[in-house]
Length: 235
Image 1 (tube, one colour):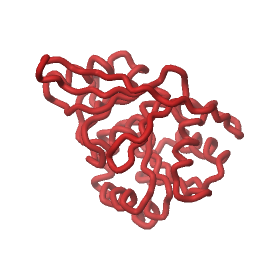
Image 2 (cartoon, one colour):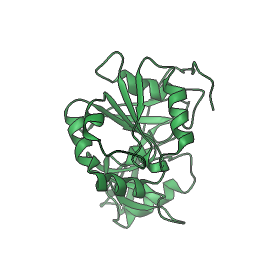
Image 3 (cartoon, one colour):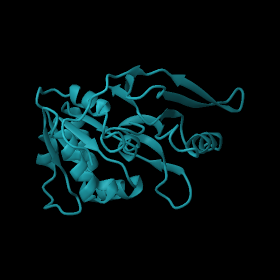
């Protein structure tokens, strides 16, 4: 998700419902990973408020207040949902705890891996991040998906020029940009569908065109999802 879900669209949980619909269980176990926000209590509370209204079993993984028992917790889930925040700090903490290897094992076992913003770009080879002060730059991700990813493509004015500039300077590989309210569904490394919770939200494929020495940007239309209204009070 380039942006959206319960953290950005608390009155329309269409993207969250779509994620849960991909799970292998009718009552999926869904694990929220709020590392990028520093395990923000408010963010965690919003997760439970939203997902308690779904037919699922919500849980969260606090890496700043953890006993270190990670593998069994993660591998017991049907969905791992990664929240937004500081991607660079999140990945550093994950690597210290050995979480990337566990997430790879979860993916290979059939678990759905999802997320918004930092929780989107982390799965790619590279991402466009605002983790560094005062600038957007390229960051290496986990490499579960090839290429690069830029979230908030229509939601933050500096995202489009920054991504294009990084491509033109060869500092980032080609990849996908995602608007707020849009999501790309990948299966086995390829795009299956693009869905959106709001009108006009879409994704884009960006590459550096050697023949014209320019950035090629192709808009990818998204399928509109029906609105999903929360059944619990929103924060």
